[in-house]
Length: 281
Image (cartoon, one colour):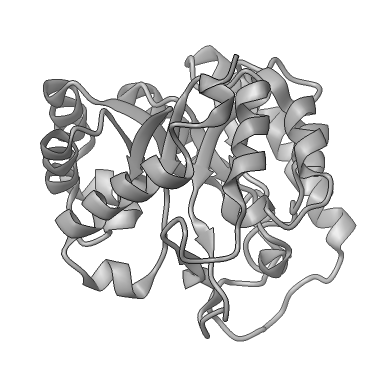
């Protein structure tokens, strides 16, 4: 399996520094974040990645489709993904309308069903635009603790139901161990996903959960996730793409990024690859 570095695992690095780090550590793909690409400059990022011979495994992120002003930003995100030749544009679909991540509640809607309908309606607009630009959208279901403010889609089954009307080359799904490890139906849904798997992202789920639940991700092996059955299922479903190490963790962000990337490679080898599903038979 091919490890990719999601840029936020080494968040203190600029795009240029992250690209250089990947080259030095022998990592052949990088998952980029739009705000960092904007800071570097889109054209400059295209040149940096291409000059280094890296693949862009994903661009994070589009989405927040439950807001009232989702369309223009998502069209821009699709255009950026096209320029970067990203493997996919990750969509975090958004929470309840009016609930803002990290802010106290103000005026908002409690209508969860309507919020999910908004997501479906927005996909009907974005999928043709992405198709025409050769971009693959990737719906990412998030752990239910983020349902109110980040993603009203919590299970892989929900994401697949939304994706079903569309060509898998246009609308796929993200399998992220942090968000899906708890789901008793996840292995069956990974098998159902098959060619719709657009990205496989790995990190661990920490216990106890830190006060900021966004930072509850850990290095593989530091938490509670059994990676083997999930990875087996992803491989059995036919996924051959890059596997992103994506970790949001305050201690890792404060550490030396080179040391973090070196540890990620070691833990990836121990917990993700090589793997019995690849070597058996």
